[in-house]
Image 1 (cartoon, protein in one colour):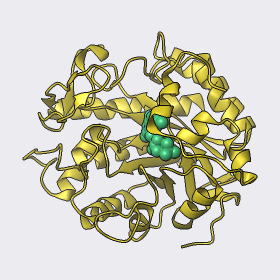
Image 2 (cartoon, protein in one colour):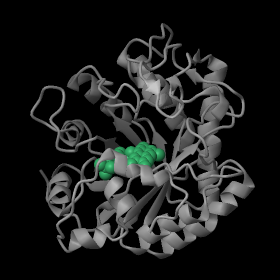
Image 3 (cartoon, protein in one colour):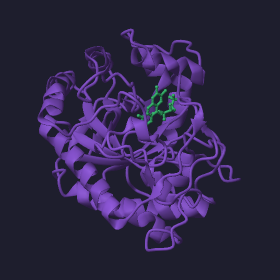
Image 4 (cartoon, protein in one colour):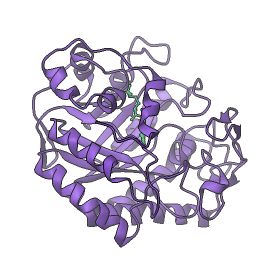
Length: 356
Ligand SMILES: Cc1cc2nc3c(=O)[nH]c(=O)nc-3n(C[C@H](O)[C@H](O)[C@H](O)COP(=O)(O)O)c2cc1C
């Protein structure tokens, strides 16, 4: 428990958030050519800033042209043209008084060859998720277990994408270590069976995340934010607990806390859910082992849930509620009666129709 309130400001390193409400990263699959989102997807983010969100995340940006992409029509920040497309968006969002962070990801085994220009799928180990890929209705392919060369190539993709974000003027970057994508695949023994320095013990499974964070921090200036996102669930085989115990999860969080990062974003499906057989939620078990700012997300949909969630965190993020309701921040302020959205409601994110 703390004294945080949703509409109090938050000193986030050298930034001042006007409130504790953020737009969670949301993939929109809108890029038609050149890995650049559609204009209405940019406009959607700008509108959320105009309508009062203190913090905005981009969709997950793909980190390289070889194997990082997991879905069709995703975006990158690797070329001058891509950088220039984001510059006016960044400037407008900043003018509206919101802090804007670029999230970047490598999908690892969560893709399929044709979606990547180099037709390759890589992961810590040659193990695919059990569940079918819902987009292709086919099994996920068995990935190539990554070589040291692959690891360096992937790290370089994160670094180049972070440089793109800095060049576009973003306030910070986030490294996606959640949801069963590549870095999460290294962290979890469910997807990592390596017998070298990158598998086995918690320290070994953490090593790749450490190398990515260290390399990225070198190109993200000290006055910009660097955050990581973590979860105990993955997009495929969702019922699986990616960490074996509260202790294992907390060991990972302690390691993240030793890094030069500025916050940990904890992604859940339900912020209030009690985890690992304890009577604590994910934010609470994270708070026990870190002094870094914590963001929490998952089923925060009205004033009561936001007020409740912020008791154990510094910032709340919303995905579905703010996706579907451009006035969500005002509605929260007015304590309007709002309903919880179902997962299927989020499919609207992928329609070609501009969202309000
Ligand atoms: C349309 C959509 C796209 C998403 N894309 C991303 C993403 O790119 N990166 C990410 O970390 N999480 C992504 N998520 C997960 C959300 O950020 C969030 O963690 C999850 O939806 C739970 O929050 P909610 O209950 O407020 O929807 C996405 C969610 C939705 C609905």
